[in-house]
Image (cartoon, rainbow, N blue to C red; front, side, top):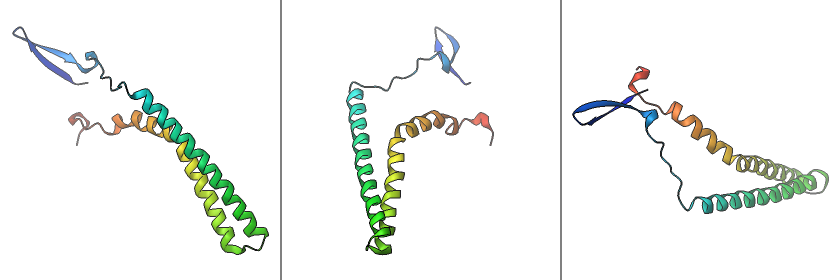
Amino acid sequence: MSDIYAQGAGTVQAVRESDLPSPDFTGPWQPFVDSIAGMVIGTVIVVLVAAMVVGAILWAVGKFGQGGSRMQSNGLMVFLIGMVAAVLAGAAGGIVVYFFDVGPEWMNFNDTQGG
């Protein structure tokens, strides 16, 4: 823990960082941004699920119909890309929270760590 030294009334007093108030980065626009982000993620997931359905249909037609192997491989590719993208879109909030929690630990460049 580092100390911050404040000079006042002719003496120097040590102030610990834990004694300082934590900054508040929320603004009056935060609820609006949160609702827009939620709507965008929901819309993206719906569009990706629709793409997965189209990809599954193309895959099945290529497999069992007269579409050939190119239609089958393209349908499978659309389905798999849609599935991975939907998982990433759904997990976006968790990913952001994870890296905000981990970030200060691996981004700490104090001289006390050696090196």
